[in-house]
Length: 162
Length: 162
DNA sequence: ATTCTTGCAAAGCCTTTGCAACTGC
DNA sequence: GCAGTTGCAAAGGCTTTGCAAGAAT
Image (cartoon, chains in turn brown, purple, cyan, blue):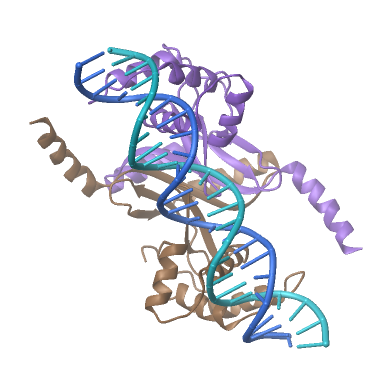
């Protein structure tokens, strides 16, 4: 967890249950969903569906791949997870209880560096107002090479030239 | 084309040929690649690989799906196309001869609104410097609902309540 | 009871890849 | 002629879906 958590009034499971109950067409809150939400919100990190499936298996939770995909979608709809599409694959992170932020992604090691800057919000606020656009979510990713990978890459490059 | 084009010294085909020729391990410039680059750079727009394949077919160009995918990757490497991952799918747009910018994506109609704001560049410049991160590219997308879709959605919502 | 959810496996979609024929240099 | 490219079709990886059995309200 890189950034300070945001205090929330309800635990994630309750928040999700409320979301399901108050939909136009109420949906059911099941044991699998409860376990999944608890598992996901144990710690802030970036994960994808396949990794989560493996993780659940290791944790001894029996939740099918299909249910994982279906619940992830609902959590995004509920505004509890943010989804980012990276290399044509979906990655998720907490939106509930975690501050809005953006990312630097290292193409060398895959690390995601989180950062926060109020100017990004200001720009979006202003631009969306100008266009009469209502923003639901955002994904601001900059790809490149992190400090460590730059170091190893430059020494590697020297070797390549020999 | 929403934003003003950026003047470039070489036509896209020449730029690409130069890129291929000056690689560590030189690559060949083929007729298919030439036709593809010419086709892509005829007008600025957002497109995906499958759409491009269809487009080429309509235009009477015989370029296989595999070659399209392979050439798109090279054009991204060459810095001539920018790639954005949206809904786990790759979309492309001109990077060569077109200014750096960001997008609002309407979830209703799929429209992509381009915008430019110097503050976004400033933030990235500052943040990357702080982290010793070297940025190669960026993808800043905000999802939501555009003005028109907001209108039709609100009138639709009224009907739903009857 | 009714209606929604689950799990399985199959299907879907976009993308990559192996290989033989072909082509640029 | 050598090394890289093309096209085809098959394989791959991630995600969605149809359906019968099971669970929530």
